[in-house]
Amino acid sequence: MQKNTASSPKAPAAALKKITPTVVVLAVMSVMALAASGATAQAPDTQPPVILGASFNFKQIQPTVSPVINYELSEDATVKAVFKRVRSGRKVAGRCVAPTRRNRNRQRCTRLTNVGTLEQTTASTTGSINFFGTIRGKALKVGRYRIELTATDIAGNKSTKKNLTLRVCRSCPLR
Image (cartoon, rainbow, N blue to C red; front, side, top):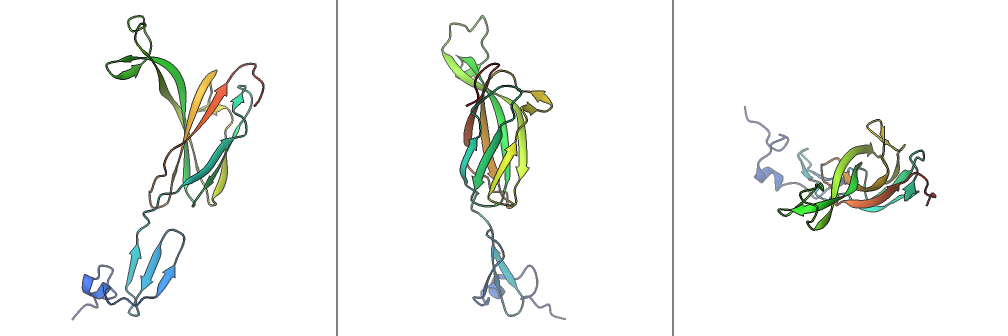
């Protein structure tokens, strides 16, 4: 008994060449060609999502204030916000390390230490992350922070990073 290669999921290249030019758009992410015999060929999603815009409603907060991160994407994706604390450091052997007595006369640099991550999956191209001033159940300490936003679509394509800055202070006015 001979198998019908045109309807088999692993059709040979000869059967795929006979696909009629009927194009069915399933979503923004994929295009599928459908042959009369039922064989399909799907183009993979290789376009990463783009973060069109991102902002905080406050750039400087007190520990009791809850800022909101607003963003706009080119397609549906999971948005990841990585919070990094901006700290001073010293250059030692080409790397930026924590200051100590021993390296106090070395060249200054800025180092980033990971604080935590917030993640949200959006079903639309606009969204917001409500940030309640805590990461992993702990309030952010007074200081400067960099928030790196990245978006990952269903196909696993990652966007380029978009950086936001935030300052946490005890008695600063909200801006």
